[in-house]
Length: 70
Image (cartoon, rainbow, N blue to C red; front, side, top):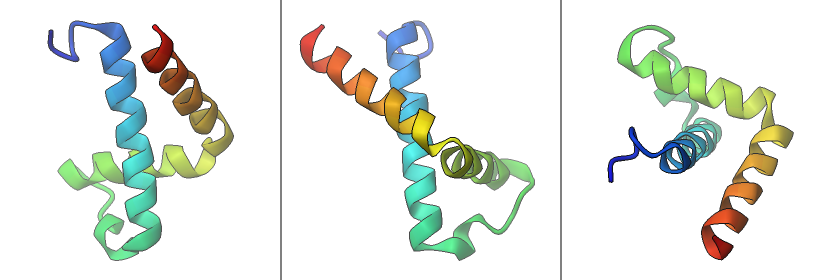
């Protein structure tokens, strides 16, 4: 089933995208200088990961537990 039609998979993909963009922005800041267009989407995801990092980490932990046990 596609991640677009399954809400649990969709949340997993979104959280992994946010975490990945945040990590890459910390390692390679030049990749995320452009704030518009297609690359602007990744800049926004990295910004969400930076600003809401406690909530994103709680979400990742909760998703990890739910994937392992459910």
